[in-house]
Amino acid sequence: MFHAIIFPVLYGLAIFLLGMKVMESALSRWAGPLLTSLLSKATSSPLKGMLFSTFITGILQSSTAVTVITIGLVNAGLLTYARTLGIILGSNIGTCLTTELMGLQLGQLAPPLLLISIAVWGAAVIVNDYTPWKLHQFKHLFEPAQYISLIVAGFALIMFGIRVMQSIGPALDSYGVFGWFIERASQNVLWGVVAGACLTALIHSSAAVIGLAMGLASSGALPVEVGIAIVLGSNVGTCVTAVIAATGSSPSGKFVAWTHVVLNVGGAALFMPFIQQLHNVSAWLSTDLGSQIAHSQTIFNILCSLIALPICYLPIWRRIDRSPS
Image 1 (tube, rainbow, N blue to C red):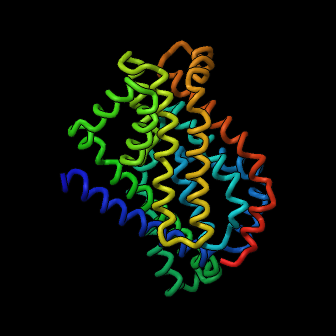
Image 2: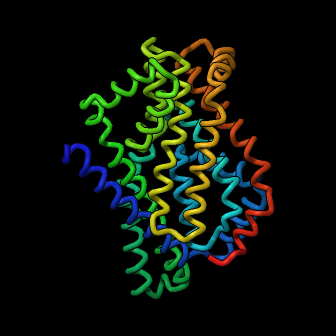
């Protein structure tokens, strides 16, 4: 139990938090007018922030990555709390691409990314301190290269930490945790929501949990309605990573994490009575049972974000930014 579950969780959590602090520190030291200007334009309104975040999350195929980076930017003072609201909504939409495609596994890129970034950082430090006269004209590029490589290294550590925590999945399966949840979820839709939330919180991957539900539904072992309930629960479970990332954060960083929690929990609660309607619409889009679950997640996240978007324009959020911490 200790080696298979407890140690990987603690070890992965330590790596995750280390990556957060490395990334935050490098961001705050390196951030210049260019980065600040880009973020300012991309998040000048909640709608722009939502579209920008949808695009970035779709590329990274990880809403967790976008949420963690956002908290890091807020802690580094590069982003105000009000400008993160659209980003949170967009990350929920962008992550649907992961489920629809079940494509890249970002955590697999973490080790080579970490090694490359450390190598680049070391080379930049050495060259910056002992610049040959032939490279002297490029000296102004070496210090930014150090910070950028540290940002990438911090991000790689975060992804690697999540991957380590995800490694407890087979052990949980061997202990019958997955089977226990799925068996009860088949009897009651509410248990499906609980199963989705708990399993996602344990393995830090909503895509993996939804993929499991899609596979079971395709084989006929799981009713689609229960699979959709698992989707709703997985949106709640994915908030755990954001809360972990906010450990030791600034008040604004904690606001971002808990706003993520409120939006996701509120969305799941709002759509729980309409699971059958979600199933009906997704069944109209596809006859494949697994695809119906993926489509229902996309519909759910888009509708939740559009419903919450007008709230992001309320002036109270700007007043929170101006209030003393």
